[in-house]
Length: 388
Image (cartoon, rainbow, N blue to C red):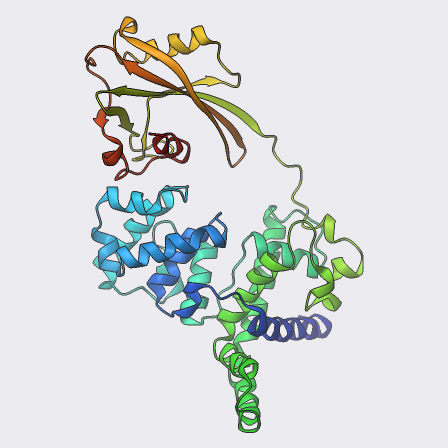
């Protein structure tokens, strides 16, 4: 590393640590060093906003406070606790990993990076985050926020998704957290001298605590800066603590970076759902393993392409499900739900079906609204259930 870059890294780390000690959000998982709790937060935070995660994290730790409880919990329970967070493969992998930790590590979360990386559902970023935050190890992290911060600060114009550029960013992240690790002893001694003179300064005390866990603080500061200041649009450059070191800011290129290439076009998808009722109960079915939203519950539905359906086709689609004799039911529009999942723009048209006769054999089960509240539904179908 040349001297100029080394000096820049040194200033960058120092300024980020000072900024984080004064500006870090008060998040519940920042009040613990328990690797289990930190791991749960990192899994929940994958592609999910912090404000969404907080109540889910609190409820999970209340219901499943230990590794053993997570490993032994019934499938229905973990899915219900995760209901609304989406990307349900995460919770199934989390339980698989908990079972591995109980079986192979005696229920104690492993501290070696290689052992953490080997757990189901944990990639390089998540392993680095857990090891640095829970154990203060100099393990780098690289998520969307960190990529945005680094490409702007160092003026990297190549697409970060490309293999060579991505490897370069990982190296940068590693150099920064390694530099932070070297500050533990040198800066803490200086803070002790300052403490003897100013014992009542809360900001100084916070800064001293940050130095003791500088690897954790550095990685979190990169994520925090990307979340609060160095945002994808309308970046708050004027209040950025490292704007003088930022190539993109100095060159008026903030909006250009990171260069992620053309965004994939959105795909429209259309579904028809049927809320079939008979004597106070409604027909629901559980999605099978191996499909999207596996193990979650839903009302009978079919995908019909990208266009809204004509009334005749609605009846035809319902009859195709073979729920009952087509002469024994009445279809009525219930509601339309629109939502997005990654690049898909989904429209769900729902119809209420009141059966006149006893239902024939179906591919689901009949539940009362109270019983349905105990089940984990997909997001759109949970909205339908709430209407009952």
